Image 1: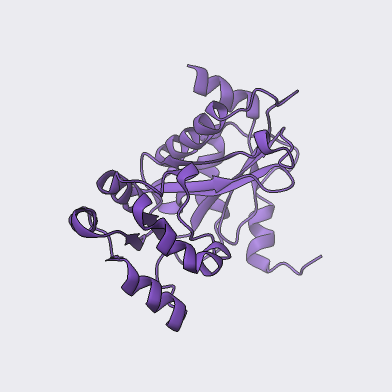
Image 2 (image 1 turned 90 degrees about the vertical axis):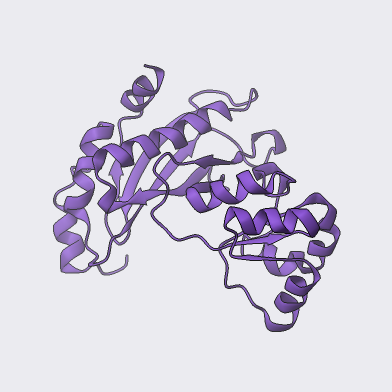
Length: 236
């Protein structure tokens, strides 16, 4: 077991490991258990009752957080002609086609966080699929990043859209904001994620779908949420 610092252990003492916190209790507790000096990110982990080995239970998607992530997102768009100009107008940081592919191939340049591609240039982008794919940067139609709707997608990614994919253990991880957001904004972002996951529930999933939910600040302990309470808030 890794050694924990004094700050972490002090934060851990503030969390009742046996308790399942309400959403508001948990988000209000986050600032009190943050050990970092910077404005830490807050992450959510949701354990789902799915088997990712079955293709129809591979949960993957994206959600636009109502209050964003608090992070500056650098967006690269592979597009040509009018769509390239549309991307620039929407606020994309890097726009191009062959030139960007060549730069990534020759320089292993990856100074961006998200990618979008129009369908007509995907054959070109495929040449660097291995480079982008291993870093989770490959445009994918399943999460809406292979699209001709460049304007909307760029604005969503810059404004706080997060993507997620279920891991082998059936767990979804993603960022839901910053500690500085405060309880209300964090709670609303968390509800947006849970609501999206509920809508993605596969018909073949049996038993309890949302098994557990926990949130944690960067470098801080996790807080387990009362799943039934969160779902009841969602249904209101």
